[in-house]
Image (cartoon, rainbow, N blue to C red):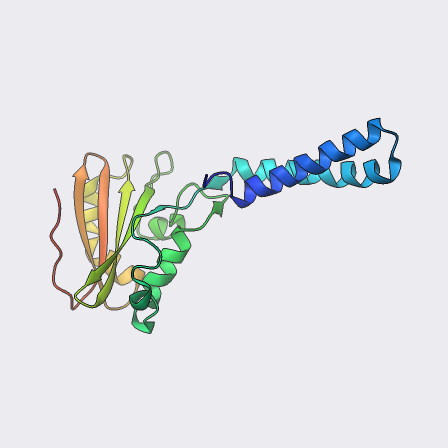
Length: 187
């Protein structure tokens, strides 16, 4: 259902509907209706198909949207709230979520870029944290570990990063407030 309601899908459907209406009107000798709908419908259809071809769906949100709304709206948690909003929306023309951030952190592989699979919001003793799960066959876990200190600082002040590998080629990045207690890391 999520793929059907993407902006690219909506534009494609609108263009297809206009094109079909225009074609039917043309066959019925209704020039007043056929001319504008065909001339607008075909470019809109092509634009929608172009959007669909470069579409990157949002990361799966594990935590329900309303669950940690109070923590998310706290001004101290603004960097993580912005990060959450960024990865849970449709992206166009990018290979992966957080592409420029991962490139800046030197955690990017052009052939097999890390793909953000899911994001989960965490309540860390009243603090707000995020748990990001990546599939990253092109970037070894050791490279992620080397950048662990920088990862926390990169995404916002007062954050620390915890890394774990829960399967071969899959990395869990947990961003937590620096003063919070460590969360248990699953193998």
